[in-house]
Image (cartoon, rainbow, N blue to C red):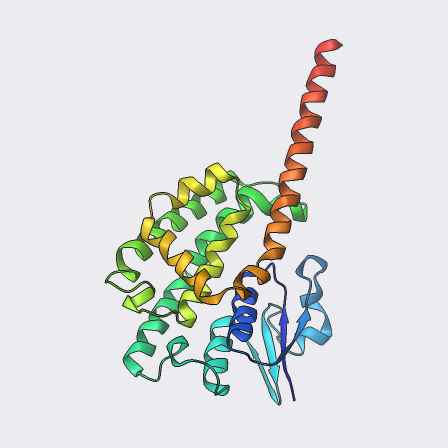
Length: 247
């Protein structure tokens, strides 16, 4: 039975799982679960993941959710996966798990809080929240500094001193890609101080192309739409302002 991957490409962890499957030649069926339509709350999907989050997979009798668990499982279950993604060496595995565990309450938390409250909230009908955005930005900036000074310490191009990417690199880089939704000034302000982080992101992209670019196309379409809406809003505001002056 073919592996089924339930995902929304606007979800950072979903993109990581899809890219991993494509890069490693895993035969799978991608089933879109549209978060914007709240399809993750359907009874059919909650039978697979009662937590109502993507990604999730079904492989034979196995139903599995949480992207890091999925990436670990796929690395072990499919013999064609290169060892560097999740090495047989237990010491290397332990280091990868330390990054993945750290990621949840640091880089991921900061990115989600900042991008949503600073940029995306109006898309789902909620107001921007500058206070929550500021807290998220603080966590995000601290996380990028930790990656720069600690996780990328050493001569390797990838996390924990490796010369080849692991599932941790893929998971974290997909997270940083969400920053593409920010205005250019905001994104550059966050990323510019972290030269090693920028090189690491580029190295991970290069190691997973062309699949990395293809899976992220949807993100750049959303960015384009946000920019158009922003421009229209600015034009409307100017027009309104002019009309008020004339009256």
